[in-house]
Length: 477
Image: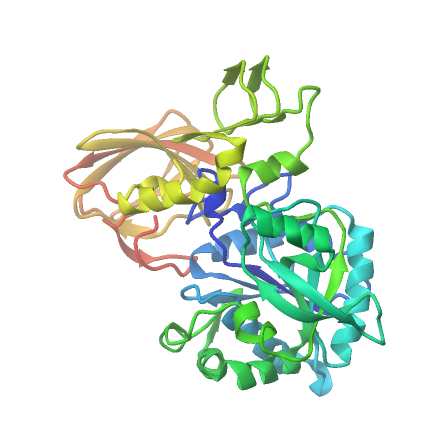
């Protein structure tokens, strides 16, 4: 069984922590590990599991590569999508890869998992995988239906039908239904016929591609072309951009599962959550005696039933109830627990207003380390830059800004024009406008510098990159 982990989501309902450049699957929301790492770790003890295939957005490739380094499933194939086209094309690309690399013409069973879900009961989850795997071997397209615990309006539903002779607890799929209103959700819950749509699937690679050929041939044709014209560099497989851009955008549900006669649903009751809102994080989080979930430096006085998170400074609350407060380096979100689904509407509004807070954090991660904005005005800005041991920024220059670097921790190797020299703590240097330069950390501890930029234009796209060890192009520092 080959896990195919889909890591292309944006997680807008968990804004302001989850953003376009650093979505929720790469954050440690419930433990010290990110959600992607947790998804990998829950498969480590399952017998017969093979190295995974990760499908992600090209912008997130370094997150994936770095976070998999510390996983037992670290030797993954990482397929990069040049743009999002939903789950059906992503899984098709993974199926092509799995078939091409299968030994002796084998037809591997694929386990499709979103990277950002929570499953608490691993034993039950593994038992369900074993049953679903046998059905997939016999040609079924299997999905997992979560046994509902409430009349939830935030999930799609699957209606189960007749039981299978070979596995009575598995059912034919009668239909998929969209997110219901409250009364309809209550009817689904009381009927016992409906399950939450988990977005997890098991099937043979060839079975899925044959279904695509029958029900969504345009997706199959475009994805096959993007795969055949893909390029491999370093740790990544890059789908061809021109071919993939012509692929229709559709989910596995719409493209295949709603049409096939081989669809099967297996009920799963294993503490599942898609962590689709801040209230969902409150539901599954560890609570104190006042039913508060507290993350970070938080002081809660006479506050009950709240989710309180601070990624930066002290967060203090007095006399509030059922409120979500999320404090990041540059945004504070306050929402009543009953209104958290509307965070997505707020993000849409910010997008309309072209606010950068929906895309990037004040703390921005890069393959070489990170930087954080400290202060900014019309003609200057100040950043704190951290460079990992042995890492280096690109060899670059700027047309509109000069930079002053002050080393506050560690040792820096600086390239400035034709010069190359070492800076130690409390030493500094100046990079004039238009000067070719590079910053490196030759030491064994993280390098931290304060960078003061000054000039007529301070945008991140004012960069001309001449050399980069990470193979990047464009406006990333």
